[in-house]
Image (cartoon, rainbow, N blue to C red):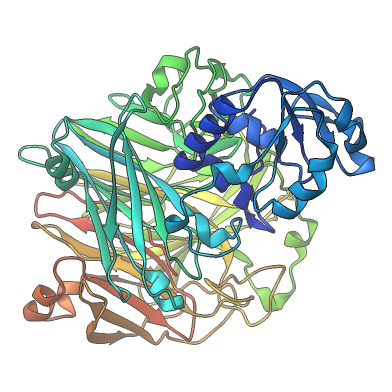
Amino acid sequence: MLDITTFDARAGGNVLYKALAHPLAAEGLARLFAELPQPVAIVDIEDVAAPLLALSPVRPKLAGLYVQDVQAVGAERAGMPARPLTELPRTEAASVLLAAFDAGRAAARIEPLLPAGARLATLDAAKLPRAMLTAPRYLDRLNFATNFCFFRDQGGLSTRLVTANYWAGYGARAVRLWLRLYDAAGAVLATWEQAVPAGAGGIVIDSAEVRARFGLPEFAGQLFVHAIGAAGHDVVKYALDTYGAGNERSLSCTHDANAWPSDRYAGIPAPERGERVILWVQNSHAVPIPAGAIALDRMGAERPVPLRREVAPFASIPLDIAELLPDVRWPEQVEMRCGRHVVRPRYEVVRDGRTRIAHANVERADLRPDPGLAHLPPELGRGYLLPVPVLPRLRFRTLIQPTPMATTQTALPVRLDIFERDGRQVAAHFLGRLPRDHAVAVDLDALLPPDALADGGNAQLAYDFRDGGEADGWLHTLIRAEHRDSGHAAESSFGAHIFNTLMTYRDEPQSYSGPPPGLSTRLFLKLGEAGRRSFTVLIYPASAPFHAHSATALELHDGAGEKLAAAHIRIACNGSVLIFPDEHFSAAQMRAAAGGGYVLIRDTTCRLFGYHGLMDAAGGFSLDHMFGF
């Protein structure tokens, strides 16, 4: 297990982790430790030593670790016993590292304690260049608005990152992107900066364009993205399309990475017969992933099988699940144990000459069952809901598979409620208390008559305690849609929330900004290109009775962020709508929005949940949940 603290559900992302893990910070740490006379004593007044040494590509020879807090004396940090700072003058170290940023005042207090001839250094020597900083205080979260992206231009497949300068809406005036592309071996292929529109304009980074610009060979690796000048949000959110050229028919999309590594990931499907499921293991750090640190397990089996090879710094390896788990079969599920070495991994399903890519989700280790969920008051109605899009059933088949997403989840007491587009409930199906190792995937064809949801609708997964059981609110599911004629498939996964109630429970209903209840919507929908039509399924879920209809605006923006036009729709409570932007805006308006334009979906009366994708004329399509800001 990598000795780092990454994400806390209460406090958010750990800024220190992002500061130490940044590729340029790793280079700075390597230079610092290479230049310091050895051995090195570490003064750790801010409890930084463990992640510092875990993430540094150069490990110095150590002469002890010293702390200021008397309660920490004797405790183990970074594999060493903590000594009192008063003993520092007696160390035999040739240099002393004060493990802190912006450390001028602390360094002045430490300097009189240095042993004779010892050199004093601080982490300020490993800071990012001043031109890359947004805020004056170094460990300000806005200085590290960063993320990773799976990025490939290989074998006829290309990738396209699409987002918008949503930071402009929070007052950012001059945003730019610092980008670094790594190949499969972790070598740097290119480093560059990209301008961002001054307003809330669209941002597109296409692997084919990048490859041509820098004259690169084929690659399958990762792109590190750092937004400089950000405001409001310190996470880079994006949609990532994978598309084929020429005779390559593949088309899929996936959400942004999670920005912080986790101990485990889940929601990975086992392969059906005739399929290969490839898990992309992408090292997020400048230190190797040791052999055996990555392992796969059949969900619930508790028999993890380790990967017996090392993964180099920033490298990407395609791991065929069958290499470690040759006997798992859909609808079984796979759990990835990775010791905080990778951000949210991608998996790729290869079938019938097509590939589709999706993401795993963070499996929480900090959750415990919440007894209150079985006894929510009537004001919260059905409580936690997980909205699932159902594409028109005459053309698409939909499968839903609940996925354990916390290490303490041993049984999922769940029910599936199914709604027509106008919000009428047409079915409810109790799935039971699903054990952790269940192999259940619900095919809606088995629950509904052929004419139900012919034009599409939605299903909502909810807790159901009729047979007892426990819940924690971290309810997730895998959603798979299949085109009946072409055989093309797409999948997505997400978690549950309490939706559209005036009363609140803990931090629900959530909002994109501000405290609960989150009763507004701001969703980003990219536009189609090259014969692929953009679409979204918007769902208006309500845990308890709410407004009969939404008041939803579709705002078309051009590549500079200027609003070109608006269309207005109404969605029935617990209903849904399938939207193609080109059916709501004129051909001239769509042409004006081409080249980075998008649709912003706004509603101030309720919180909608959305899924988006692209469709082509040959039955190819993509699908994943949308992001908001």
